[in-house]
Amino acid sequence: MKRHKNIVIFLLFWGIISVFPCWSRSALKLPDIKSSMKKVADWQIDNFKYSTTDNLHDYGIDSWTNAVLYLGMFEWAKIADDSSCFQWLENIGLTSNWNIPANFLKYPIYGLYHADELCIGQFYLNMFNLYKENKMLCSTKERADWIISNPPDSAMSISNKQSWTWCDALFMAPPVYAHLTKIEGNDEYLQFMDREFKRTYNFLYDRKKKLFFRDSSYFNKKEANGEKVFWGRGNGWVAAGLVNILKLLPENSEYRPFYENLFKEFVSQLAALQDKDGFWHASLLDPASYPAPETSATALITYALAYGVNKDLLDKKKYTPVVKKSWTALVSAIDKNGKLGWVQPVGADPKKVTANMTAAYGVGAFLLAGSEIYQSYYKF
Image (cartoon, rainbow, N blue to C red; front, side, top):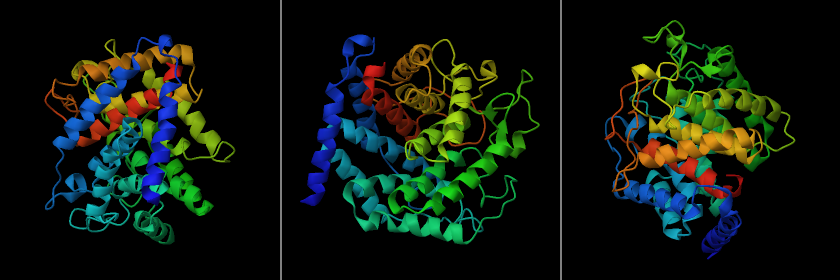
């Protein structure tokens, strides 16, 4: 009974938000945003699958790829006004036993440390906030406590997966520590997050280009046009990760100024790299070599831009048109059945993309972007 009461309160809250916006202020139609999200979410649920053997790190039910989907689905469930979405998500947690994976077969040394394995903890903690059931919290807290008590190897070589040595990690793990501080009231989690995030930032952020290298192996690589290699989705991961951190940091937090300032500098640079059709590409500085649109990068960056406008971190007049254009581009990548195309497969660098390519994390990113626009629609 308590569980159903929590869901009802949640849905009522988001229902109030959905009728507040002034529709006439935007060319975007609120029902169209919702219907596009529903179409994509329904297709993904109908076509959802995961591995139970072999590469569980990338394809298991608790893998990072699926964890991003659950984060997007959680936000969609608020908007959908349909408790079955939350039931689907709860079934995911029950199937995974609310456990943080280790995947020692793929990473025998780094299994307990690997940032990707913590990504699903963001979903578990969101569910804990709704249901207040300790089983949704325990494994995430236990893993974070163990890592803090057993400090990771601090070497920043990409071969070391104990530390956050690749830029994607800044989406996967930091929000878990920020959320644990919010739940537990223990600043030790946030101290750890801040220290580790800044080590990665200082190592991978190019202060001239205002973009993140994927990892140290790309420091001396060049694209065909002579530009440095900055991967679209990799930078999208960082932008979206910053959003998820900022959503959890109190306004008066001593840590907040650094993350806000980085967000404003970095996301504004990403906005400047949008193409004429509203997309971002697999390679940010050499789109001519990768002319196909790339929707996972586009969705993650759109999510960040929409958040920046909503929270007045970015100038509304300047960046609202960028968000509108990118959302229109994303919707154009949905086929008649609801499949989101042009998603680059699992990888670490720019690759060719086709319209038939899709992936759960691309759908999760799309739903995150749509939810951020929908929930504060009056800004657009």
